[in-house]
Image 1 (tube, rainbow, N blue to C red):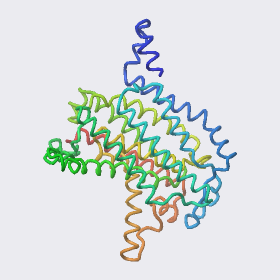
Image 2: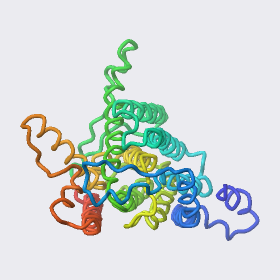
Image 3: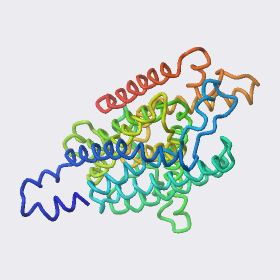
Image 4: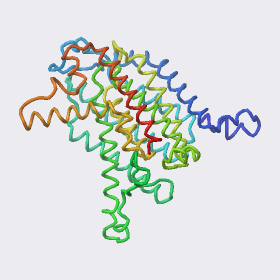
Amino acid sequence: MLYYLFYELLRPYFSAFNVFRYLTVRTAYASLTGLFLALVFGPWVIRKLRELQIGQYIREEGPQGHQKKAGTPTMGGVLIVLATVVPTLLWANLTNSFVQLALFSMVGFAVIGFFDDYAKVARRKNLGISGRQKILLQGMVSVVVGIVLLVLARHSAYSTEWVVPFFKKVHPDMVIHSLAKHPQLWPLAFLPFLVFVALVIVGSSNAVNLTDGLDGLAIGCTVIAASALTVLTYVSSNARWASYLDIQYIPRVGELTVFCGALVGASLGFLWYNAHPAEVFMGDVGSLSLGGTLGVIAVIIKQEILLFFVGGIFVVEALSVIIQVASFRLRGKRVFRMAPIHHHFELIGWSESKVIVRFWIAALIFALFALTTLKLR
């Protein structure tokens, strides 16, 4: 809205407003706006959640030190979503399909998380909707994203090719074009792409959800991952940088940088209140929407594989759960004292603050490594 006001309407009369044509300027303003909204409205949201008695329920089998957190306001992820969506509406070009898709995805996953959180509050237990229902709903949103991207690919605004880090000449296409030529087989031609997109987005959403177990852990790692994706989105939309780094050039994806900036600012603002000891928890409305959004951004800018490094801590957390469950079912033994792995380190004697800060450091190392791979091709 402000973009249209300053650039489209007032720029012809005041040349100073020409500065709003630059992505870097609008991304900075979106980030600052998101930070401002989260900081200013944070106390009000926390107060309202307390009044509505929307408190966190702590599972009994977890570290006993967490029991004192019972009753802490949850569903604070609503603040993150609003502090991301509003700056995007203000500073981004809303006619851009990728911005629309990112907004749809964030709100869609937030709605799923809201239903899950509401079920927990209603049942007064740390059990929301079933895992099968949650994955089904996440898959539906992800498939919609995939279908929209296929439509954009038909108009040459997107590519279904797979970008493989370290191998600049390897670009396998996720669409089987030979099948697309046959009317009776064309749905099968797009199935691999849709399945791949769903796996990336649903996996990312649930990985962040699993990481959200300590004060500030998930949101701190999100700030780092979202910052790295902001850089990747910008260079993907810049012809000179894309050519220099030998990555896929996606001209219209530039506006998504503004959304990424808003996401970073909103996450930083929420971290102010979620830092240990947390005044509010993000809940599934926050973790599912953040993870899903990170996955969608990675899919749009063709950095799905690099997302494994950008969100390295999220991957480690998810893998720890998979390994723990597989080991217990196959051998009847646990690999970790408790999964996700951040609880394992708590149970071996690390303080909560030490786990959080060390995981942030590891997340930063993962993100920096991901950025260095741009030139290691």
